[in-house]
Length: 561
RNA sequence: GUGCCCAUAGCUCAGCUGGAUAGAGUGCCUGACUACGAAUCAGGAGGUCGCAGGUUCGAAUCCUGCUGGGCACGCCA
Image 1: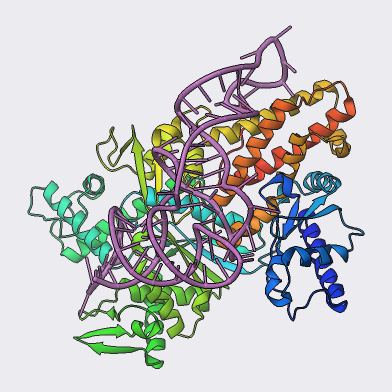
Image 2: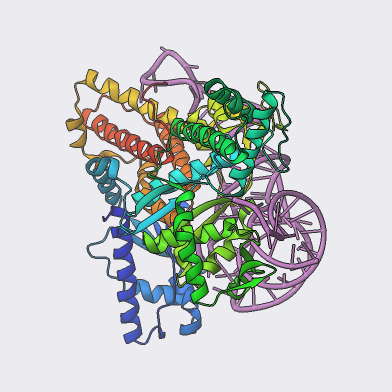
């Protein structure tokens, strides 16, 4: 999908390259290869619409002052058929391109045609991505880390889809293994205790009130019928009951949070055959050995710090072994082009060995991307809040959504880049004022909708607006706003390449800010009917861009507030 | 002790593969509603980019060392 800005960049780049060739033929600039250089939108408006550092990058090869090189390039630059109006040398040797404003008018047309699709690019070319995120343990409720991971993952999925990838949102259900064992033992302990029998929550087990609640509810259904059966049967019944309830609760909480997964992948599926096949594969390739009664993977041969146990001396597989089988399933069995995992910082030590394991079984580990997300701290009254005041226990994701709302929660979690620690200010998130950035953006959207509603009073239809003449828009605030709207496809590309949704959050804040500036500087409802139509087209396009971005972020775009 | 992440305005953070005078929000100060939503806008003050070296036309950005904080180093997940 081509877009206005992209086309212009391509044209300027090819003009520069043509000019360089001519300069070379004339002996003005010597070079073997064109070095890497940048064509960017400069931060300073005085530096034009686009700028390049090509002349500075050529100094070494050309052995010439960059400003002289820049002059040669400009001398031979063919600007026919481009929007370039003026070219200047600036600073140490930048070449600044000032464009005719008419390119911005094309952007408005582009938006009015593409609508919800404006911003879409074909970077991904339909490549299949498996994006696994949240994957909270089904042994209890979700916490802040799951909230951040959920917001990050879902928005990243939307960005990648916008960038032309085919994305599967996946949740891995840890419904097997050691922690489920502990879960069962904890449930059993409470079950027995409720009948006055001896019961002990195991070391590292689950002490939370929710475990007791499960046991009580279980008793309401099954009474004492599991009191005198063997422990294995009793635990299995308790686990089956509580796990299903917890998983259903996870699904409900995530849905309330605006996240819908395509695949819920249960760990127990891997224990049938995938795990054995993975072990066999590693064995055939000579990547495992036995020591102290356990089976080890030679992870240190593949960039990890040390070797890792796959099968414990009690015969049970480790989490790591199952994870290897899971990622073989993703990248080989299901053959995704790329698997992206979002993990909390406390799992970062796992990255090198899992990538190593992929290489060891012959899967290119660059097909596995792990986003490490730093931890979240909640603040209330300027202090770290760990406990819910009302419930007296740790604050869950559903507590947070209940308190601040889904929009604020998702916006705040996507305001910071994933590798920076996130301080979540609860007081700010619930504030319905100008201090709260999520309201700032939503207000811009509602404000536009309000004006558009009044459009009919002026006897104008959406049709009339789309036929408006944008070249009437000449005010500084109008041009600035249009320039920003033009950047959306480029922002999507950078966010997709860097796997960084927070970039989009900041972008939409900029759009809202420029809209408000425009609004305060220019009236939309003016006497001049043609100008009014053009301005309506501008705000209607702005509304579309805000809407598209908020949709990516999973945040509502209210028409009234 | 070893590895990974972080350190930029009073506070919370941007700064895309090295580029021009380091930006935004918030807080503080001064202004703007008889006009489309003031949940808004315009302006001002506020910096040794943790410290010290190095690489080069150019470093907040890359390299090395140090300081301070987070996380991880288990036959847990």
